[in-house]
Structure formats: structure tokens, C-alpha cells
Image 1 (cartoon, rainbow, N blue to C red):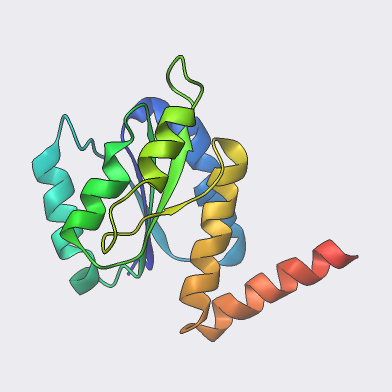
Image 2: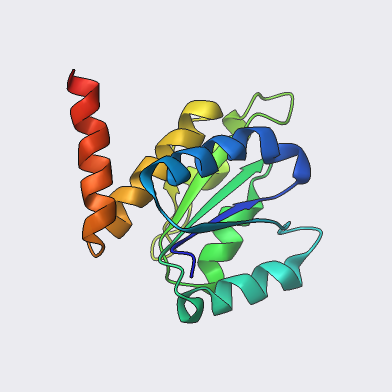
Length: 151
């Protein structure tokens, strides 16, 4: 049963979101990876959002570029925490996606991380912190990772 859903708005986002999955694997966090678009496959996004909690998903990480609709649309269908990863897929180099993710209306929050690779990895670390509140093995794996940074 996946604890974290890793979603992306387009298959072209996969190289960035692969980094999210790699961190989750390193920390032993069960996850699933899916491609769905708020604009091209809205029914799939709706279904995923509605079913996430009952399937055991505790955090959703959604990468999207341009208008970055995916994280916000997911947040409209679930109260599972959403972490948005802005992807630099337009002429604005991801700033448009960052603003779209960060400027959600009150009551429908989406956490925003940095644009691109750093954000993709930090989204996984943030998800591990969140699920680590409940899952001691994940908390320990993240604590061990952080201890390794200290040398």
C-alpha cells in the first residue's frame, strides 16, 4: 500500500519527478508514480484525489509546469496534504508554476517547494517528515539520513 503518491502532469516531467521517487526509495517510503493532467485527464485526477485516503495515501506530491494546475486541482478533491513541485517547462522557467502552486486560496493549501530538481528531492524529504509522524521506521530513516549530512 503506497503512503505517498508521486504524480506528474506530463510524461515529459518524469526526469525531474524520478528524483522524488529515488529519495522515497532511499528512505524506504512506499509510493506509487502516475501521470495525469488537470487539463487533459481531469476525470483521472478527480478519481485519484477522491480515492487517495481510502487507498492509504497519506501525502501526494504533484509535479507540474506552466499553469501547474495539477496540485491545486488535487487539493480540491482531497484533504490529503499536497506538495507541489514546480517544473520549468515554459519560457518563464518555472516561475509561473511556482506562483500557481504557492497562490492557492485560503482553505485549499498546497505546499510549494523549489523549482526543479531541488524541489523534487525536497518534496520527498518533506513527505517523509509528514508520514514519519505516524510511521516510526520512516522517521528513523530520515533521522539517519540527516545524521549522515552532519558527518
